[in-house]
Image (cartoon, rainbow, N blue to C red; front, side, top):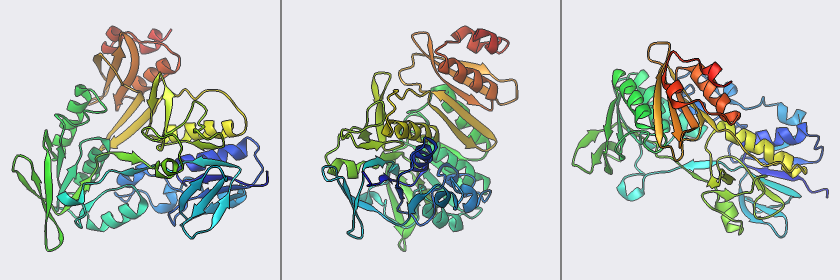
Amino acid sequence: MSDPIVIVGAGQAGVALAAKLRALGHAGRLILIGDEKVPPYQRPPLSKKYVSGELDVERLLIRPRDWYAEQNVELRLEERVVALWPREHELTLSDGARLRYRRLALTSGARPRTLPAEIGGALPGVVTIRGLADADAIIPQLKPGMRLVVVGGGYIGLEAAAVTAAKGMQVTVIEAAERILQRVAAAETSAYFRELHRCHGVTIREAAGLERTEGVDGRVASVLLKDGTVLPADLVIVGIGVLPNDDLARAAGLAVENGISVDESGRTSDPDIFAAGDCASFPWQGVRTRLESVQNAIEQAEHAAAAMLGAAAPYNPVPWFWSDQYDVKLQIAGLNRGYDQVVVRPGKRPGSQSVWYYRQGVLIAVDAMNDALAYAFGKKALEGGKTIAPAIAADPTADLKAALG
C-alpha cells in the first residue's frame, strides 16, 4: 500500500485531481506526470490572450511553480508514459523505467485533428494551436497584412480568426458544413458570429470543402477548395476539433468509446484506474458523453478524486463553456443536444442577445452573447431543474428572475 497514486497528464484535470486529493486529506505519495517542460498551464488563452500578447507564461500557469512542492506533489515534467500494465499496476516510461501505482488517474486530455499529409497537412506554415510550443512557434509569424486561412468554423477556428484579424491580418475562414458552428449551435448563434466577423473584416466561406493546401519553396502558399477556388495563404491555422488521448488506455485493454469510458464515479473498466477531462467519456442523461471544457476538466477530476478515496455520488454536471471573440463574450450553459425549439431574446445592451434551446418545451441550454444576466438566469434554471417558458425567454421585457419562482 506504499505505492503512490499516479496521475498521467499534467493539464487542468490533472492538477485539479491532485489538489482535490490533498484537500480531502490524502497524505500519501502523489505523482503528476506531464510530457511538456513547462509546469501545468491553461490552454484556452493560448489562441487568444497569449497570442495577442496580453498574457505571459507565468500568468498562464494553473498553480504557482512552488505549489507542487508545498503540497508534496511530485511533478515530473518532460516525461512520457508509453505503456500501461493494469494487472501489474505498473507504467512504463519513455526512458524504459517502470513505475508502480496503487491507483492511477488518466487525465491525458486531447490532441488537435490535423489535415492528412497527402493533402498538404504536413507543409510548413500549416499549423494547429494546442500547446504552448505551438503558440510560441506561431506568434513570430503573425504580421499585419499577411494572408491567413483558418480551416474550420467552430469556436477554435473563430477565436483564432478574431485574434489574427485584430492584429491586422487578412483572414478567411473556410467551413465545410453549410454554416459555421453548425455542430455546436443554432443557426441564430451562427448568424450572430458570422455578422460579427464580417464587421471586423473577416471573410467567411461556408459549404467550402478543402481540396488541399499547396506550397511554394517548401512552405504553404495557397489553399485549393473543392470548387476550384484558390485562396492565397501565408499561414494556415487548422481548427477542426480534437481527438481524445485514449491510446494508452486502449492498448492496455481498458474500455474505450469516444474517449476512455468511465462510470458515474470516473472509474474505468479497471477498478483501480480513473479518468477525467477531455479524454474521458461518461454516462450523462442516458447518453455516453465527452465534454471538452475547463469546467468539466476541473469538476470531473475533483469528482474522480473523491471516488478514489471512497465517495460514491454520481457525477451529474450542468455543463458550461465560454468563448471570447473581439469584444464579445459568449457564455453557454447546458448542452443543446437534441433541441427542437429555439427562441432569441434581445439583450439590454446594443449587440447583446441570448439564444434559448428547448426539447419538448423543456429548457436544455442557453447561448448568451454579452448578456451575463441571461446566462446567469439560464444556468440557475438548469441547475435547479426548472424551465423558463419559451414565451418568457423571448420577451425582453419579461422578468427572468420572477420566472424562476
